[in-house]
Length: 258
Ligand code: T3D
Image 1: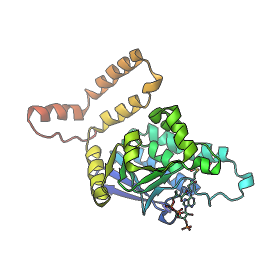
Image 2 (image 1 turned 180 degrees about the horizontal axis):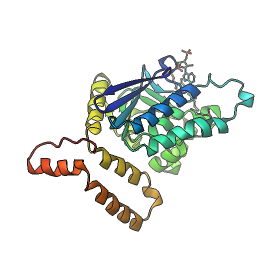
Image 3 (image 1 turned 90 degrees about the horizontal axis):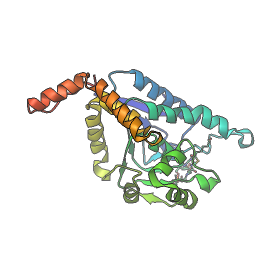
């Protein structure tokens, strides 16, 4: 891989965006490599969670504005539909948890990418800026979908229109990130958190992700029905049996993701 680094720690796959010289700006090559890495992760049973993070002082500065040659003839529609959108869909539908470790600046489509993950943790010094309207664009690659659901229409519009720089504390208050870790302990705590998720009951995590990501399009009756169906499936899993056994034996469960 040219633009991303892959590493494995136990059941955790670590994907690192690796173009630090431009704050991990997204190129077409990077989108294709990310698409492949997530597809492979879905198929590989030994991987039970994915951590997406960045190399250097930035997480991701969005679309590489220097990677668009011949702007006049460049089709943003084609680029989004063929390269960005399949990745966003893949991340949302991936039946494994995706933790996003925001190690620094996060802008434009970098925010969309982070929002397509399931849990976001950022460094105390990380900063967010939508940046799209600085260049006369709107949120894309799922940014509109995620931000409006997360913040409501008015706040999302405010952030898009003003390009306010959001610090980690504000990001936490807005719910854009789940946790903030101090810079010095970011790497170690991020790995510790992600490994805990990777060692969890993977099937239950996958099914809850599937259900929660559909929740706004379902009514209560439909949710109740799906909960019952999914619980039936999970109650037949090895991890459920191990959970019950560990509880009775007063010990921590050793989940296998099966
Ligand atoms: O279909 C489509 O393709 C459309 C998709 C669009 C989605 C989008 O993502 S639109 C938004 C694109 N992103 C931006 O507009 C952000 C542009 N960058 C910035 O505004 C600033 O760089 C930041 C606020 C992110 C960070 O500022 P700062 O001061 O910490 O860093 P810097 O000095 O500006 O950047 C460091 C280097 O990274 C610099 O390179 P240099 O001068 O040292 O050689 C800079 O040019 C480069 N860089 C930063 N962002 C990008 C970039 N290079 C290419 N593309 C970038 N997006």
